[in-house]
Image 1 (tube, helix red, strand yellow):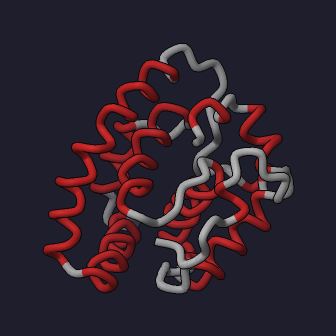
Image 2: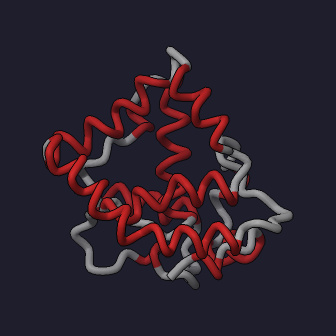
Length: 168
């Protein structure tokens, strides 16, 4: 989890740009692999994941990590079936492995699986509420094609894609 008590990008009404939020995210989370320093063939998926942390105001704690994937599937143009395809892609799957390796390196394998189990029981009611709130979605956040959003404020992005009701 971020060492900073409350990163600015987590403020649902933040006027930081997405680019500024990303810089803050990497500065506050030095344990996170910066995809901008990795080979481009799989850096894009990692960067899109990190951008999602900023867009949805999520930190790197287990609660927000587990909340982030469903939020992404339900509110962006990156759906569950895309995720399954990505996991099987031999070019991109190593990038996903990097994310898990970061967590395991920081906390250990036992922590990872016990945290998932414990946190899911707490998170499940919130996920159900989010699922209902996202059923009639008209606009989807661009997951891999996020570049046009980098210089927009987080508040603008969250308003444009109706994300404010989903951010605490």
